[in-house]
Amino acid sequence: MCTQAGSQASTPPAHHPSGSGGASVGPSFRPAVRQLPAAGGRAPVGYLARLPRSIHLTQDSLKIVGSTHFPVSVYVMLHQKSPHVLCVTQRLRNTELVDPSFQWHGPKGKLVSENTTAQVTSTGSLIFQSFEETMSGVYTCFLEYKPTVEEPAKNLQLKYIVYAYREPRFYYQFTARYHAAPCNSIYNISFEKKLLQILSKLVLDLSCEISLIKSECHRVKMQKAGLQNELFFTFSVASIDTEKGSKPCTDHSCEASKRLSKAKNLIERFFIQQVEVLGKRAEPLPEIYYIEGTLQMVWVNRCFPGYGINVLKHPKCPECCVVCSPGSFNPRDGTHCLQCNNSLVYGAKTCM
Image (cartoon, rainbow, N blue to C red; front, side, top):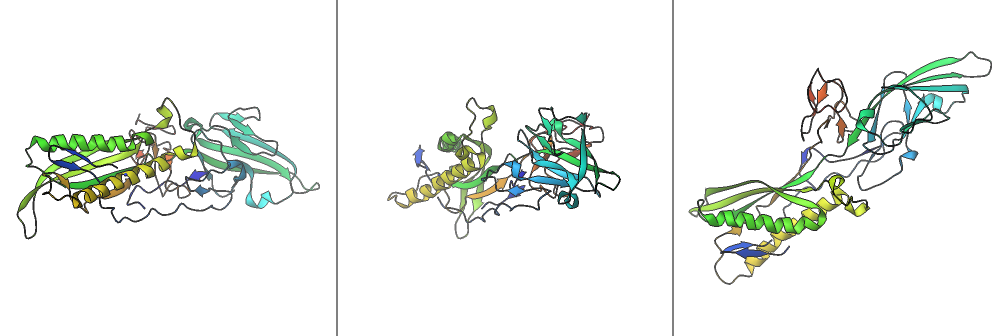
């Protein structure tokens, strides 16, 4: 089954202020942003179920049927159990079959029921126990059966293309503007470092990390005012890859999407507090302070190397990072698989 994962770069849909050296760092304005679209509901049985990432269902309840007209695409999350891939069409699924026999062939040859990773059940269903990207490919089931005892046997060949997929490595990107010291001042550099330290501390317990994308100082001409110096500050918050951590997170509340959502809220609250703190000041404003209303946020997707998003090729899993097919590759954390005629495997990371 496929878990819905957000769009490529869509607008989606925090804590204590601190400062030093005449700079005020403490939170602000909550930006008006559109909410992310709700995750899709269940797709027709036999193809793909797109489920909200916050919902966990056993894939035993999902059954995929074949077609005699075209290969059926099947999407299996990396390292997870697959739905049941049935060796029947939708019509035959509800029909009595006499003396049926099933034989499955995969990219590496014939599959047997004793296989530990790709199990064939007594009723001809194919189930992957822990799917790896190297298991992606074309799987063919040969079905022989009699419609009735009196009739001769019939033969049917059903093809499936099974793809590994992963959720995107999504993150939030924020931009904010600050009234600044002169652009060549060392105070601006000190302020940037202090701001990054505070933001990083905010999200540390959520296993998230802050990364500075860009920080630039510009002189801006204001309406009915003179020139003023402003810092244009762009940073991202992303989930630390728990697969590489010393203590893998298995609890439902530790999902990357949930931790990122909490981190986003903390950051928004941090900027809200900056405005609140400045509003209570009796003395003049500090030299460096957050400009209310300038906080902006976008939600960005990136796929792991060897995976990509392709709505046209994978309409049943339009927001999944699907393993690159032969003839394509993704060398880094991009969004799409690139064309490469020399690539002959699934999940290629180089064009060789």
